[in-house]
Amino acid sequence: MPLALLALAIGAFGIGTTEFVIMGLLPEVAADFQVSIPTAGFLVTGYALGVVLGAPLMTVLGTRVTRKRMLMLLMGLFVIGNVVSAVAPAFGVMLAGRVIASLAHGAFFGIGSVVAADLVAPQKKAGAIAMMFTGLTVANVVGVPLGTYIGQNVGWRTTFFIVAALGVVGLLGVARLVPEQPKAEGVRLRHELAAFRNVQVLLAMAMTVLGFGGVFAAITYITPMMTEIAGYSASSVTWLLVLFGLGMVGGNLLGGKFADRHLMPMLYVSLGALAAVLAVFTLTAHNKIAAAVTIVLIGGLGFATVPPLQKRVLDQAAGAPTLASAVNIGAFNLGNALSAWLGGLVIAAGLGYTAPNWVGAVLAASALVLAVLSGLLERRTGAHSRRVAGHIPEPVAVAEAGR
Image (cartoon, rainbow, N blue to C red; front, side):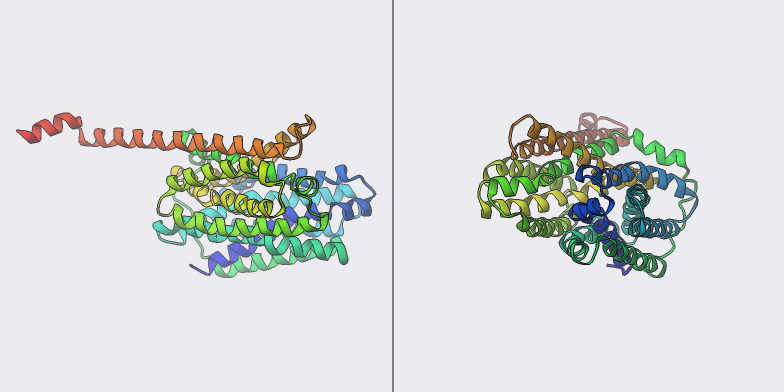
């Protein structure tokens, strides 16, 4: 794999760390700014909304510059946002810093996916995308726990200064290692927008929302589920999330490897297994060991869908894939927000802390239905194209051959 993928992975590591580390530092931030925990939670919500809106916005703004230049600008924006958060004198300023940093998130992964895929041979594209996303998954294993520990013991501002420094390293890595890729000739914004008229692109994005949403339906409420149902102590949740992160790392790499060989079968298997494991989690959540194993599986199966879904969008939007790729990253965060909301509804309805697992199972199963539909449409379209290309219907061709 090219060293350029290392630079992209470092940037992804920093972005993944800043996205999730705030969840472990909410009490410290709330106490410092003298706001409630729910109010401090806007730092999570604001970031997610910034990703959804920033992905298409920043990609469109970057259509006039090369992809390498845009990646450097995005990492610069990411650094600025985290520095603003680190020095914020008031809660509103920190919220602004979070939003600034989030604007870089979707576009970085979207454009980075296109760059990573272009760096390797066609049969290795999904693996290259997975290599970039490894930075995001490793962030959940190393960056988030370490950042949380530093924030709780040294100060949360130190954590955000360190994340900003990671952004600087990522910026320098992109500048030094990522090659210049000439802009595609004749590709304009209208061509990028035209990709959204392709039903296969829309189906892939819907699979992203529902499939990865299934993961976060369960993981969003993992703390009360594990402490109230499984019997873990609150301090053990950090290590359970590390296990979830390890599952993400493994699933991401396996998803990239097998998606390069059999993309749609990989989606069928991972989404189907994810739906089943989420449903079973309503039972295994009552046992410590079984719950821990299930959490690893959810992380692995959930992230096994990421490289194939991202590659699916790139394949179906070939010729002008950048905007579609970035919007699909926003779709992951939209799925997170949707599933967290639905999970909260079933808990509020009195169905218990394991009820979000059923929500996740239904969402993942819905994504599987869309994947099967997408595959059927692709086969039907392919068969039609082959008949048209032959100029004569297959039965006629056979009869002519017999003569």
